[in-house]
Image 1: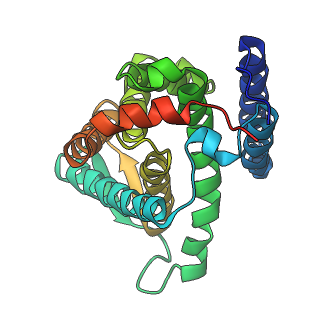
Image 2: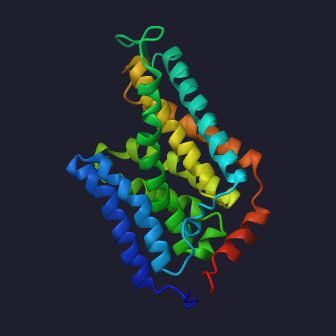
Length: 256
């Protein structure tokens, strides 16, 4: 493959294509169309001269599968804990959902949530984290990639920006935790796991419980606190020294 550097206009066109593929299904109310984002990301990586999903720090190996699974389960636990804490603090009022007794929700109904929460999660992670890190390789090896990626993540929620500053702060906290997972490990998989686990837990909770928001200020703050906890665990469980070199090396384009 061509080893010449990718030009800024090429990065710009690739971003616009991914952004449109992610946002259009939401605007049209056809979430299933978001399935196109992942193959499009692979195609764009090839067109830009990379080997494939490695371009977005999504290499396939048992190590990274374990990282995905571990962060997925961890994020689920954090979400369930956040709801429990919120209920104890009178931020939420939680009661069993209709028909959600023992065996009331079929396992299949929960399993189907896996792909329906995975696709939006990984799609947004590629767009707002993997792509940003690859397109800005010098920043990818610097902690500044974390707030920059988080800011892109906030702006990507174009349909929620009108909700105001508290929404922006909440989204930024989410973005910092997920971007830190990429920065500290050199792989997007842990970020996908955190994002996916949180979204999947939301879906599970919606089917098992009726969660009423009692405090419209407290609810987002509970989510912020949960992601600060995620960030603390990510920072405590990883070291970034070797990762900086990883980003420098993996920033090189593929050769024949």
